[in-house]
Length: 399
Ligand code: NAP
Ligand code: G4F
Image 1 (cartoon, rainbow, N blue to C red):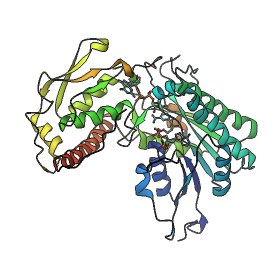
Image 2: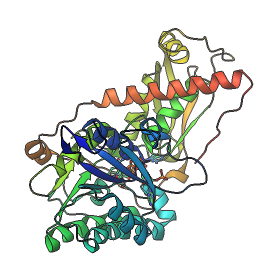
Image 3: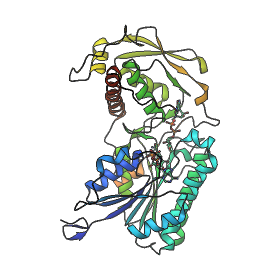
Image 4: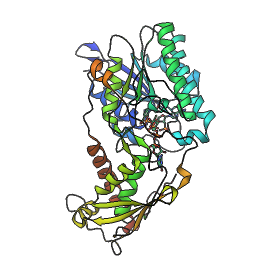
């Protein structure tokens, strides 16, 4: 079978911006499984930035290659036009964005350029190339647009009230997508996705920051998790479930906008408790505000030992004493540096429209998500500990 044909018919072709990100990687996997030819846009960086998709890479000199990457940037219109022209995709998924809310307060202009104008540039590329009737477009919109929420739970009809430069930039992306649908008849849909996480979530989003810290504290590689607003509440789902929804939206006869959410809400504090429980640590929180701390209350040593050594009863990890995990030890502290100038205190989505129209259902529970993330970060921490004990240095990345 050639790379271009599937059962005698041309393979569907997709272009994914933000291919190197969490969602880009899962979406690329899903589309390849479905037989697509996948083109991704990656940014030039001074070091490799393709770790999340390296397992999908096939040497382009081989036969039947279906995964390609192109250098590009959402701030470069001519580049986007050329990539769309050369790849001529049936579906475009616009996932590229400066996606960190707190960073958007530090880089508001860049965030607007890549997230708001970047979306416009891509839509214009479709129009300039006269592909309005051929291309289906997905815009990665976000629950951050609800910000200071005007209704609980949030649904497609809930008014928006963004609370960050990121939220405001994404609101432009949302409306310009609606406008191109209405003005030019483009099959363009917004997925209003609530927070979705995974083992490959960026390390500075709160869930991954917590699961990495829990694993490293368990392995004696770190003493403390420094965190921001513990009261914040989010509707967390699994990224693999959410990229399925993106694909479903572009398979509908008519374009539309959909909320994708789990319909369950938990606080950051609850996430921290659940993650520590995965390594056998019962934590209690004491104090208030910036003085609040997470203290080890009880330890299930059997579970902690498995976390340290691995399920297969791998190498016993020697830690001086019990490492940082002893009853009474403070392992979580608040650093106001992580507080945001304007916070989104609470998000809870109602995905009934997506369930009804798209037939979308999430397959992962919150407990499975936490468990998968901690297990993954334990494996990474065990690898780091092994390397260090063998005299090698490991990466020392910090926010
Ligand atoms: P992510 O892991 O931060 O990935 C963002 C991707 O965009 C990366 O591939 C990044 O490249 C790329 N990118 C950033 N700026 C770019 C630019 N100027 N030009 C080209 N590419 C650029 O984000 P994610 O979690 O996968 O989210 C995917 C999309 O969904 C984003 O638009 C995000 O805002 C939106 N969203 C996410 C969530 C969520 O909970 N995850 C919820 C709602 C909406 P590098 O790898 O080189 O940095
Ligand atoms: O994990 P977060 O940084 O995600 P946030 O701000 O909700 O944004 C994510 O979800 C959006 C969808 O709603 C996406 F559009 C966006 O691209 C991104 O993927 O923070 C979650 C909450 C916030 O309230 C934050 O204040 O956790 C709180 N938090 C507490 N301590 C922290 C920390 N957040 C981070 N990143 N780091 C902390 O130490």
